[in-house]
Image 1 (spheres, one colour):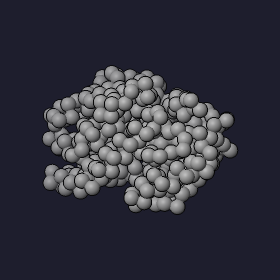
Image 2: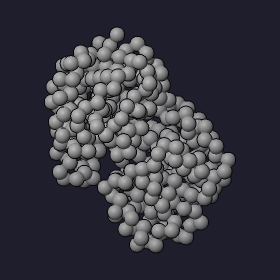
Image 3: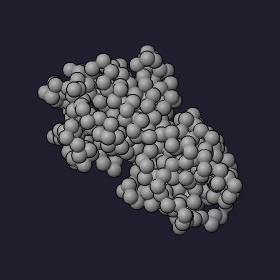
Image 4: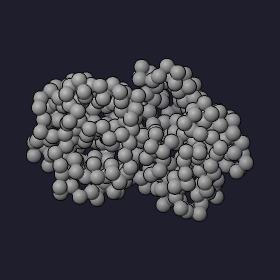
Length: 361
C-alpha cells in the first residue's frame, strides 16, 4: 500500500480557474478507482475539507498558511511541506499545480497545465514572472515524472526544459458527466464564452467582432475576473455594448451548468491554451462550438468545432454568425461534439495518473 501526498497548497477556491476544477474532479475520480492506497491532501487556510472525497483512504492535512499571500505559500511549499512529507512517510508527492518542493524526501510527480510564462511572458506581471521562471524550472527538473495535459504542453516541456521525453506523460482532462445530461431543449438567444479575463484569452477581439454589426443575441462572458477585466469593461463601454455583453465573474458550478444548458452556441477565442477545458465542456453539452485555430484546441475538438484565426476579427465574426444562425452547421457540430467528448473521462485520467504516481513505488 502506497502513501501518496497531494500538494493542494496553490488552490484558492474560486480564484485559480480551471486548475481548481481539474483537482476537484481528479480527486473524486481517484477515489472511485482507488480504495487501496492512502492519500494525504495538504491544503491551505482558504481551502476546506470539501475538496476531499468522503472516502476512508483520503486524509485532510490543512496547513497554517494563506495561499493568497503568495510569498508565504511558496516558502511553506519549499520548507515545511518536505517535512510534512517525511512526517507522514510519503512514497510519492503529487503536485497538480505546476510547482513542487525543490528538496523532497520522496518521489515527486508534477502536473504542467501549460508553459505560458515561456511562450508568452508579456502576459505576466513583471513581479510574478521571475517566480514562475524559477519555480517551474525547478519543478520540471526536480520531479521524477511530469504530467502534461496535452501534446502541445508536452512539446513545450521538451523544447524549453530539454527533459528526456520518457519522463513526460500526456494525460488529458476528463469532462463531468453532468454536461452530457444537460437539457438543451429550451435554449436562449445568447452566445457563451467561459473564460478567465486574462490577456491571452483574446476577449477584446471577440467583443469587437461581436460589435461589428447589430446583433439580436447577447454575448455572455463567464469566468474568473482576471488581469484584463478593467480593460475589457472599458472596451464594452466604448463600443456601446453594455446592454448586450454581460460579464458574470466566477460562478458556482450549478449556475455554470445552467449557462451551458441554455446557450445557443459557444465561442472560445483564446490565443494560447494548455488544454481548453471549457471547449470540452461545451462539446459534451452538445453546444455548437467555434474556437481558435490553435493546436491544443484541435487536440480537444478534432473536427467537432468550427475553427477561426484568433487574430482576425472578421473571421471571428463569421464563425459567430455560422454557429448562431446556420441550422445545418449547428446540427453537425452538436452531433460531432457529443461524440468527440465521449473520449474524455475523468475515470481514464485518474487511472493513468495513478499509474504515474505508483511507477517505481
